[in-house]
Image 1 (tube, one colour):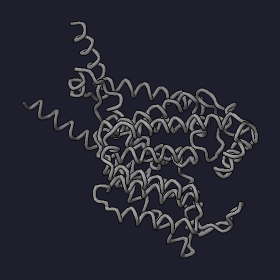
Image 2 (tube, rainbow, N blue to C red; image 1 turned 90 degrees about the vertical axis):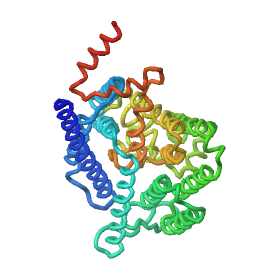
Image 3 (cartoon, rainbow, N blue to C red; image 1 turned 45 degrees about the horizontal axis):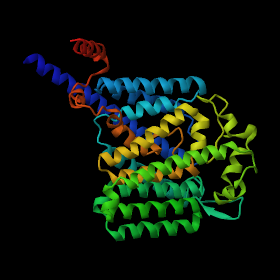
Image 4 (tube, rainbow, N blue to C red; image 1 turned 90 degrees about the horizontal axis):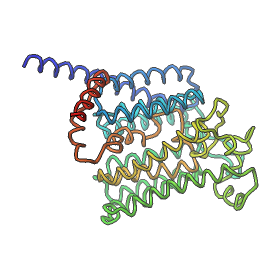
Amino acid sequence: MERITAEKTGEKRIAQIGRICFWAGLLLELLIVVVDTSAWTNPFQGQLFRLTFLLFSVKVLCSRFTLREWLWLLFFGALAGICYLCSDRDEAVRLVVFCAAFRDVDVKKALKLAFFVTLSGCLVLVFLAAAGIFGNMYIIDDGDRGLRYTFGLGHPNACYCLFWALATLGIYLWHEKMKLWHYGLIALAGILLFVPTRSRTGLMFLIFTLVLSLLLAYGKKAREGKLLYALGIAALFACVVLSVWIAYYEPYQGPFYTYIDRFITGRITSMNTLQEGGGMLRNWRLFSRPENVKYFDLGYVRLFYWYGIIPGAAYVIMYALLLWECRRRKNPFGFMMLLSFALYTMLEAHFVSVFMGRNYALFLMGAYWGGIVAGRGKNAPDAEKRRLYLWNLPAGIRGRTAGEAG
């Protein structure tokens, strides 16, 4: 009895250490995102990322996973490690550890922290810019839109993107309490913000998010059926295929190139006219390379260009499975948020970056990945009960081998 009590006490202490490290790491990640949004260049960003990686790693070590989950973590860790060795980019490794660290974490609590920290940080930056203390209130666009307001958030598109992302996250978090007029207020705020920022892409996706949210809120058949989820996954793959098609063609060549480029406000030309072709298909590699460091808007093109074809494909497949997992868990508004971000990534690379705290889809991936990789057989419930710490793995493997032999 005393031994069991001591073990439980030890497990509670381990879990407490893990929780402290997780919340400290998450808060730091979110603050890094806010600082990056400002006009200040953070000289300590790399060191801070190493610190958050260490904190999340401690949380993983303080968490228990099933043998199947540990093997999947090993697989994704190896994939991310190869990506790091080939490309010199450590984001894939950080992503795997970040998602794994969500074990036994209340994901809605984490997303609420992300919402309020990001919102508070943005409001502070807006105030500083408006007061003339720090940051710019507007820029002069090189195109046909002239003066556009940034409100201290770097760029008009970035400003509107943050508004849309926070609105989408807010709908996900509080949709159960929302009435029709709440959606109307968000739409009105979006229209009013569009006037000074002139962010057409942001407004288009805000409308999409609101329409999809209303469909899920008031359409029971759409919310509970399979069709909408299947269409969402198909739309994700369509965006990826179109991105590959875009990356294939040389500047100003190929069918419909000019029309599509004009429709998405020159994003293709701004990418493939970069030095050495930027993110064009001929620059893609299985696991990328150190030279692939160019920045451009097209999110899925950047995903494959920065990290490689194999890691990019793994991300897309897991994202598609995550969309379907939302149906299994009866989380339609999680699906709404994920699909909105997935379609937006076709045109913008806001969610393909070095910042884990910027991509709220990773929070859900962290909460749900165990369900995605879990077995569905008759032994699945028993396997779920046999969660192990990393240092218990050898004994767990021996026990399973002995059980199968018996």
